[in-house]
Image 1 (cartoon, rainbow, N blue to C red):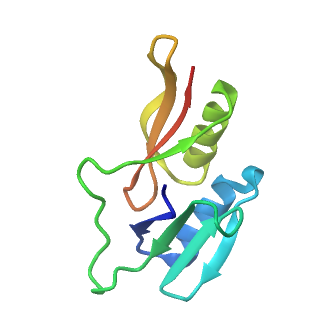
Image 2: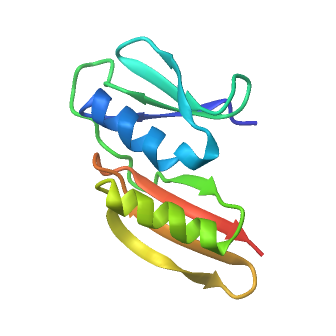
Length: 123
């Protein structure tokens, strides 16, 4: 149901590098780049993440309660994505761990612009 999600960023080049490096092992790349907005994904027609400089030229501000959740194939993949995000400059908002017994394993971080990210697997 989701075509793409957009987040505001303060430095387009840094944001494109952060997200393409973070998801490089999943084949992510910049699919469309118009200068002010860039769409990062694996193929056209699949859900993408758009990073953009705000249209009003104001500062990008993360939404209160807004979070982007990225599925993983297993717990090791959650751990790897979380640690890769931290290596790329993200900050911890919850180290990898079992959140709901036998149902949800996740990790949380804030990207360099403060956007909250979740890496998770069900089961």
